[in-house]
Image (cartoon, rainbow, N blue to C red):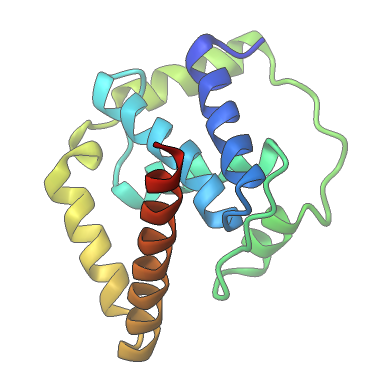
Length: 154
């Protein structure tokens, strides 16, 4: 049974879907929740990428059609597309507790503003100037559209 926080995340993601936002935007809610979990010490992560990966994995399990990374090992591709998966059963209590404890021993630095900013900067650096420019234009258009709709609502 999902807790209150997870239900709110699901609701925010559904709201994004209703508004016609991209699947990556919907998945962003899960990533955001995951970063919060790392920050509050619910569990740790070795890097911001790990926290992001956990969030995306949760989003996929919740049914959000998040595209997988274009690069990756064959096993990672299989895992993300759901092909080659056998019917999954819940891990034993022993194993589940071991996983939770192992994650609990991980560091909290992955959730800091600095590490997330570095990750965002590196991710942007991997994109072409044209790609970043298109994203900025699209964001500006969205802001403009949302400002108009909020002004009308008043």
